Length: 232
Ligand SMILES: [Zn+2]
Ligand SMILES: [Zn+2]
Ligand SMILES: [Zn+2]
Ligand SMILES: [Zn+2]
Image (tube, rainbow, N blue to C red; front, side):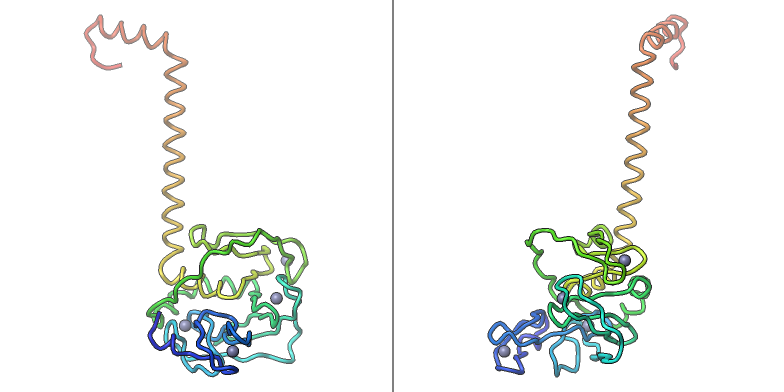
């Protein structure tokens, strides 16, 4: 964690607070909001640069755009522009809604972002809350829970074709995962897994063939032995 981050204080009551905290631990004032256009870290109101990667804050809320209902808490989600990225943020629980095309672009543009990113904030501890399924902000169908990139450990709610719902801090963790080469690692692991499965299938087939042909095999073996041939 960067040294300057620990010196941040709640603008409301002055208490020191962790840069990843969504609320002041004392007065519960909202402290941190998604503001970094590069790594989507949470930033304090008033902070000019991201405590995670140093990028300049770039956040504007659009008060006119149609709001969405939050899949997490049913609160109101306002349209938010963070750099060039448009997403919706819940005023109640700090959850985010990212439309499918935007989310895809975030995943594929990661290389551009990597140039700006120097370090990542410490990932938050895994949630221990019981699993809750949530409804898509666009079509209200139940969403799937997805371990992003299979290896990231960040479980998000996704509706295919509509978008993804993320708890506070999760978008930053996902972008950090992508920027550290997580998707390449996931792809490599998947290829290995397929190869391993194929290898096991071939082995099983050979074993079955050996079992089936055991009596024939014995005959062939002894015949070969008798005629002095070394190979089957
Ligand atoms: Zn406070
Ligand atoms: Zn950042
Ligand atoms: Zn909410
Ligand atoms: Zn949907």
